[in-house]
Length: 440
RNA sequence: GCGAGGAUGGCCCAGCGGUACGGCGGCAGCCUGCUAAGCUGUUUCUCUAUGAGAGCGGGGGUUCGAAUCCCCCUCCUCGCGCCA
Image (cartoon, rainbow, N blue to C red; front, top):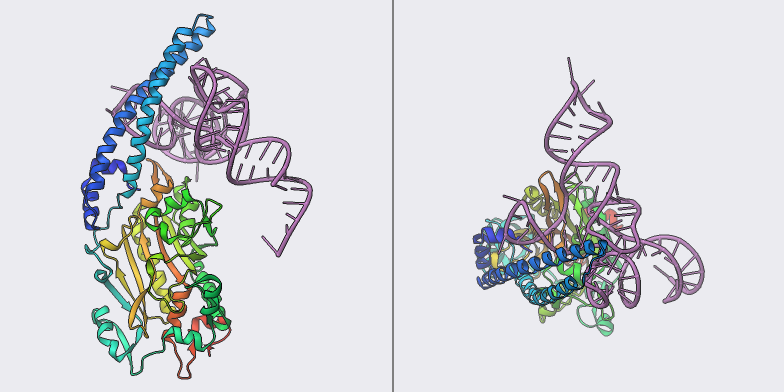
């Protein structure tokens, strides 16, 4: 949620950000109309309440003096009727106002490029050395603004889909039989690789000062809706039938909501939390996309980074979290690029977002493996997470970024580290965790 | 799942029909020639702000008036039961 006071005082940045994202000014205009109405009704209601309180006090005085009170009781009854009448209108206006308010997006960071469509995301940097099939070289160079270093492959690397089948490490058919498409049995050494990645990711972030948690995997509507833009993403969430519970799509949400309604001491900040959880996604809008293999599936494990901090530090932490993931990928020898997501592709909460995209040789493309967002005070305001300062309580800023999403990284490893013998080489950093150096 | 007890401001706790007591902590100030002790004020949210309204886990009800009484729900604690 945005800051209403700021919006009233200085609406320009809000109009500007909404426009850059491709929204009209209608929402903000509508908000101002409703806000004006709401405030005027609020005043009327409060004045009536003031009267009612005075009468009530008078009654208690009269009773003490043993004087009659019937007349004034009637006065209170009448006032209460007026209050109830006005309150009904107020409630209606207030609900509408809240709804419109929740649609107004966060103010963008100045550096965000104004455009629509992922193809307009701004290239920031490339890191590593990519294995590029000769026919994909042009695309690779264009995607890295000619800065990417690479080794040319004369043959097309085997796709992860084929490897999964050939090495007997994924069973999609039987999973489909019992759960439908986009489900999977992970088998044998690939399962060990997943466990290794999880442990590696947790150790990696733990060493960088993160408290590690495994959060609840289901959440109630209220905290979830405050941690994210739930109306937009409802169709991508699994909802439980008999309970007010949703399966989480990322541990960002329970971690963010963990401090809901709390007032922190200044010295507690920053709070770095690394979360491990399965992430459940319906992928409802993704029909026909990545239908084979485990690249896009209904659940996967993710190690997530999250930071609560003071406003003046959030841009530094945004870079820090981005660099953490880059370092992690680098330590696994995975080539990647970082892009700054353009204005039209950001969620309402994001002030700025980097996507980190790994290179997938058989696809000849960079694909998203991590997403690093600064939500400034937007998420914290909805969740009411504050910290105490000399000059009163202020909202914290929240920043989140993927640490490591298992299925995406496993696919990446399969595609990037194929051996001559048709196996998959395990990155050195992971060997202590897997106990083997190749899947074959 | 059953029974009992509980949820009050940042924290602890009192109040149990008349408009939230007190303590701790934080902040501001006073005093004291000291990093002590003491004193005063303040501490949540909203509004058109020297003023007012709301707020005692959430929602409803009774009443002129509800933290207080009644009903429903949620969560916590302790027993009992069941269980990986």
